[in-house]
Image (cartoon, rainbow over all chains, first blue to last red):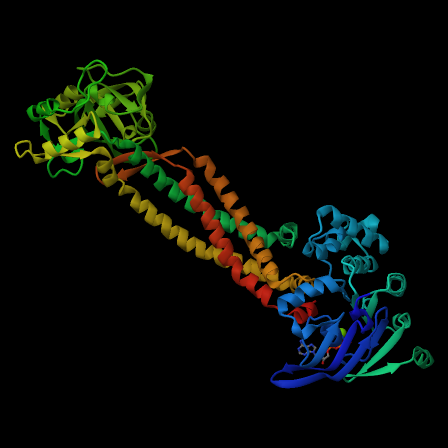
Length: 239
Length: 387
Ligand SMILES: Nc1ncnc2c1ncn2[C@@H]1O[C@H](COP(=O)(O)OP(=O)(O)OP(=O)(O)O)[C@@H](O)[C@H]1O
Ligand SMILES: [Mg+2]
């Protein structure tokens, strides 16, 4: 294993983030430190507006912190130019969104293939990877279906296949079950848990759903821009 | 690369606005192809009319055969010049001709137009390449018979085969139809030189003399000789020069074409931009997702530019298809030098094709550029928050 693997997959040091709204500075995260080791599965909870999505966006290199450093898989993201960062994302990250964010005009297969179009893989190799990813999420039979022909849970599984297909070190999920009913949410959590345990994917998941959070190894509570680590037991005791 | 099917299918999803834009672009391309196709056809007609070895001899100061007069004896001296080519039978290729403009009723509508009636000797067809009878026979000398080009036969009353053409009260029987390689000759009716002179009371009058030289050198030498001789009072022009002068007739059509092209293209650019802005706005979350997945700004830019181009290409194709049935269709315009009808055919040739393609590309790129730039400038986090 490379030297970087001993370090945390995600490492936030003194990170703060402010937004400007009508010339007023809105602090969202202040002096945040965070370490997420390889193989971890972290659920991030917290009230609306507490900065959960902001945190995820910073870890994903979709946004830059006002101060502090974000290091993911050994790469300090601040050091990368915008185009390098874009390229880096395609090689190291997998995204799972609340609204699935599939391209409505592309089939399940074509959606999952998207990240592979940024690689040098041949058409044939791409097809193999896509089929493998769709098999993992259990949708290999539906690969020619368009998103509108799938249920919400199935759409999210296609999105997970898309997040997996380039074999990323880190999966980032922002409320992956936020739009699903209980049964579909359970299936998605089964899948994420399997990815973490079987495929050793490091996962950071933002959620409002305590039942989803309970499936993670660890839970972080974000309150007004700072972390409070909560024991799962404590959560259970709270109901 | 973002696959092109993503763009094509997205256009199909928004088919109403896509179709409107395609039809709009098609109209622009159609109008431009039409006007420039006409101008091109006209230019082509005048271009093929001029043969480098041929000289047109007219009275000094005359700008066209219709306002040139040469007397018979001067005309005969021309035939004796050195350097004139001969046909297989040894006849000099020197063709004295009398041009008369006859106001004649058109077949279409109730209007009249000036038709050129040319009195010729057998040498006339020898100095015109591609001249051939396609129906009937040649006219006999000494009688009121005439032959008409197929284009004139179609355009003028009395110019059809076996019909009678009225020339200042005298009937001329059309005994044959001819073609002449789409040249200006196809805008004429021919009859016997002497008969036309008698009928129009211009016996012994010639309008112009056409000569074919042995070589380019001979052509030059003869032209100098004729133009410099004070006694002749004539000037000799090479045919390409003479017809280039007449090509000014196409300038009006071209000016209209340019005007239409510019005005309509501006409209099309706005229509395309409008459609593409709407496309970009409604797909903000898709754009944000693509960027998150690792597609860079340039790829997004190219993708939306291609989408806009696809839209315009579809329009261009439709416009060209709509113009295609007009290919080879003949029409006429007033020749501003001879003031008579000049028949020519619409030409969907390489010039017009290149023009149509460039127009489509320019409209597609300009119309698509700003919406595509907007797509690339979106902040990923903001785009992802769009619903
Ligand atoms: N691009 C932005 N510009 C300005 N303010 C922003 C921006 N993004 C987020 N914010 C603000 O930052 C704060 C934190 O937002 P964030 O989306 O991280 O919250 P969250 O914890 O994910 O909330 P939720 O649970 O509702 O998704 C909010 O007050 C939000 O309005
Ligand atoms: Mg959020």
